[in-house]
Image 1 (cartoon, helix red, strand yellow):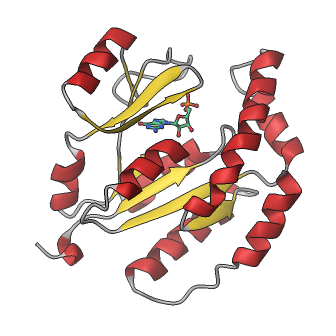
Image 2 (cartoon, rainbow, N blue to C red):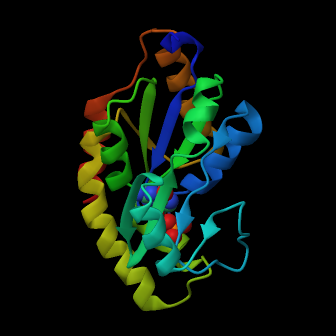
Length: 209
Ligand code: 5GP
């Protein structure tokens, strides 16, 4: 089967709090991309549902799944395991269904290194500023100051992986950011030029570090 008839892999990664989950939902609702639902050992947040946001499993079950080679990739993030199962991913892609993955840089690295026979476009989403990120993290269900501090420290490490992505996009306004992502996908799919400015991005990264 030629690449043309297969679905595309779209990866969205970001340091925690950059608004990526909402962008993934928009791609699913408006573009009908299928969301890859990960397994995690983390406890559900108050607004999350099993089988919709994640498949919530305990560490024992997760380890069994690793042993059974069920994961396309998995990683440890904030002391919990997160993983993408192979099941469904390839079935959907082979049917021509585009899939969107909300995974971290470790998972992205693993999937990219597999050199799968599907078109893959990866995006790294960044907040407009450190202050804005701190605000977003504090407004979440995690009121704990220590957690916010820990995630800010993690941000400093995560941001260093920006070069591993095809595109870095700044989420200062959700609709603009969404439009930016979809137009970059369109140009990639149609093999067209785009006005992505890597130097501007590098300036922004330097302002965040
Ligand atoms: P959260 O706990 O905030 O939902 O997610 C924490 C981090 O784990 C996010 O960066 C998210 O993208 C990442 N993540 C979620 N699912 C997966 C997965 O299946 N694999 C990997 N590698 N990372 C994941």
